[in-house]
Length: 141
Image (cartoon, rainbow, N blue to C red; front, side, top):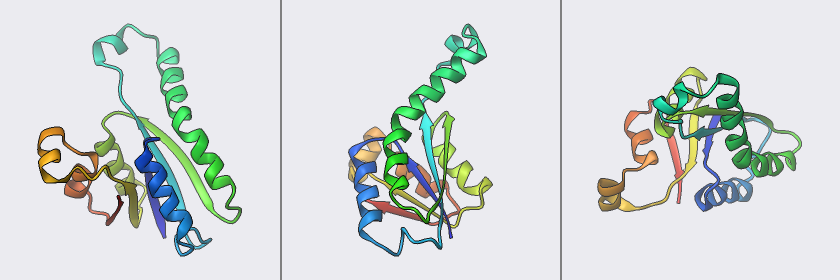
């Protein structure tokens, strides 16, 4: 099974990784994982005056801050197929797009669990992914 695992480095990502670690059926060799981090995009006006190499370096550095501890987590599991990716832009859009383009079978992600009132006020990446994804989503709270 191809599984997309969006991460943001928050305590909710850590909780989702703990869930995976506690359930042997998820971390078996039968699955292929893609770990995705969405870096918030630099506003277009600012990006227009920054050279591409500097902007790419910024995005890579920001992604690596989140991905480094997650690489260490998956490195402990020897028989797993794991790929890492980062993309600049809106997290929900990046997740839905990556799931469709990568032909993933499942998205496993952490959720803040604000509830409907909190989502109405603050919005939620998880809510947007659930609304727009054609791929099943497993939310870990």
